[in-house]
Image 1 (cartoon, helix red, strand yellow):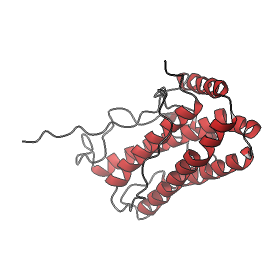
Image 2 (tube, one colour):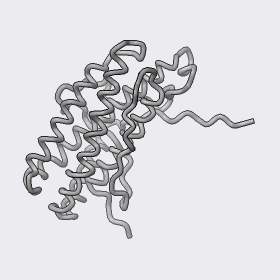
Image 3 (cartoon, helix red, strand yellow):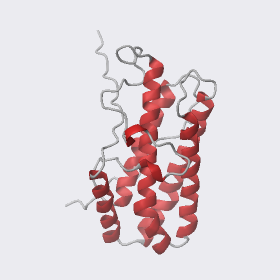
Length: 221
């Protein structure tokens, strides 16, 4: 019988969702150089809940999206030339960026609320590890603030998106390679599972953050 998904499983699932959504944006956004970084990986021996919702307001410098939720499931996907009825391809990119903002802010808030206090108390050099992640959160929040209200046609959009992508990939790699292994080495599995359940309980009280669906493949012939 597989164990319950713990807090590291849940946050690692967030990492993968963030990396996948960022890759879609970098592919679709004109003028974005992309970072070329591979998608984040993480523990996959337990099934994460698949829920990604948390109050976004805890990240300093980050915008609070209207309603605090992700883009609606029927939002136009990037790469759709029409961008949905009456929309454009740029509208699709903006929708994806807004969804990424919601997902990142929710993820950062969850780390700060459910994981970092325990890391401070139980992980050797936990304060330094948390400080690094918090600095990443601040940098990511600032990029999201600067991107708010911009469209792909704005001269600053591409450079800001590239900066966000670099900051995000650095953050995901640091946590996957340093923070999460240190957490697993120092903290009891039972505690990690308890923290994972608390995280899921918090998500159940909030609207889910739902990234826009991938566009349907066009049948050949």
